Image (cartoon, rainbow, N blue to C red):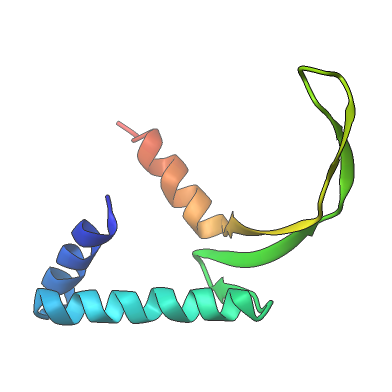
Length: 97
C-alpha cells in the first residue's frame, strides 16, 4: 500500500473527503519527521516506536582494492514494532483453522 492508497482508506474509514484525508496524513507524516529531526522519539502505544539512532564512524574495507576506507558517523531512523503489532501480524500470517 502506498501513501495515496492509505489516504483513500483513511477517507473511507473517517468519512472524509480524499483531499482532507490526504492533508491529515501529510500533517501526521510531517509531524513525525519534524520530531525525529529534533532527535525526539515517536512512540505509538500498541503499535511501535520510531527513533533516531547514531552509527559511530568506523573503518571499512574497499572490496575492490582491499584498502581501508573511513566511513563517517551517521544517523538513521529505526522502527521497532510493539508486542501487540507483532502478535497481530504473526496471527494473520498463520490463521487458525
